[in-house]
Amino acid sequence: MGMGKTFAEKILSRKAGREVRAGDIVVVSPDYCISHENSASICTTFSSLTDRVWDPSKIVITLDHTVPAPAPEYANGHAVIRRFAKEQGLCHFYDLNCHGGICHQIICQEGYSAPGRLIVGADSHTCTAGALGAFATGIGRSEMASVWACGEIWLKVPETIRVYVTGRLKPGVCAKDFILYLAGLLGAGGAGYKCLEFDGPGIGRMTVADRMTLCNMGIEMDAKAAVCRPDEKTEKYLQEAGASDYTAIWADEDAVYKRTLEIDLADIVPAVAKPSRVDNYAPAREVQGEEIDQAFIGACTNGRIEDLRAAAAVLAGRQVAVRTIIMPASCKVLEQALAEGLIQTFVAAGCTVMPPGCGPCVGASGGVLGDGECCISTSNRNFVGRMGSRRSRVYLASPITVAASALEGEISCWESEEQNGTEDF
Image (cartoon, rainbow, N blue to C red; front, side, top):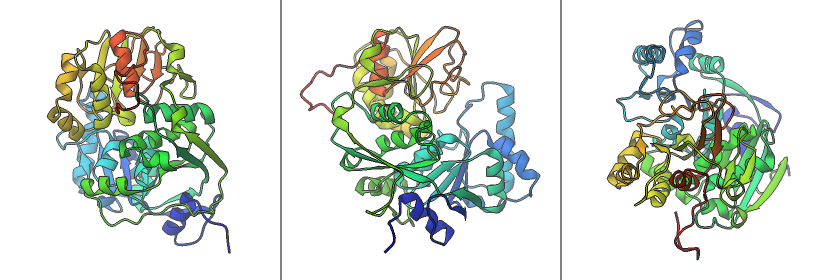
């Protein structure tokens, strides 16, 4: 009897129609492929290959990085994409007037990602969709043009690192704190071309939103993909998203892993990634008191309704001490935040609420940093110049830590009113 297979080996065997192992090359057809403003340049390459996409129902395009357009060149790029979507009959185009949002939120929220599906995206954080049991990976623009044209791509089957998680998070500690800890543990290249498999009772206790945060940052360790074991929470989320026609796949019990890590969530504390590396991990208390000029809560990492609720619980009835930008991950999240009174809480606290998008995270609009400025952000990258000036600095943290820091004007840990473990953000 042969050795068992990892999730990556099983799903890519199924998609390739033959038995494969880590290191094999497969030619596969994605269930969906997603892109954003970079679709404009993909269109140029695509037009040199053919004039019709292979399947308009498999292509998902969102406008999210530069919305509303902050400069003429961005507006021109948007116009190229709108023409292309109309000419090709794309039925999954999320424009500003289509109740859209950040592409990685849309791919999960709208039911494109599901267990056993293969998703490719022209953005490195496509791995977010692995939270729902899909094999989701980022590819280049020229590769995406080829996929649009022929519906296939070749991939090398990755080796896998298993992350087995036990315990539960303490009050005031978030999934973001856990993934920052893991990035510090593995290092920026520690999962190079590997699939990260998240499993164990600790993952089972997490929400789908938490799992999206984990998988989103898989690429920060150079992972090819990141995935969480599907369960009843996955099923409930997918029912609400309207997803159907999928088959859950998971690793065999006797699968062979490159490495296995076991982590107890009870050991995780509020954390930051210090400038200017995502793996520059530190407990938040070690940098407490560091002055900040801006706080940002949003992005594809932490712009979901659960994140906004956690931040609002900290900010309610208080006033921020620095400019604080709130950016929901999608129009649906914004609508829910309005219905729950969260937006009112943010505005009353002195925050600026922006429409869904990626602007501040990528330094394009809506909160760009100037020379010498420091920001604490819920986003996923703090590289030099990521959020604006190359002379600015960015700390990454959870929504709770960012909100607490916004109140003080310096990096701060949130002290919940109940320290007996009963309070749950």
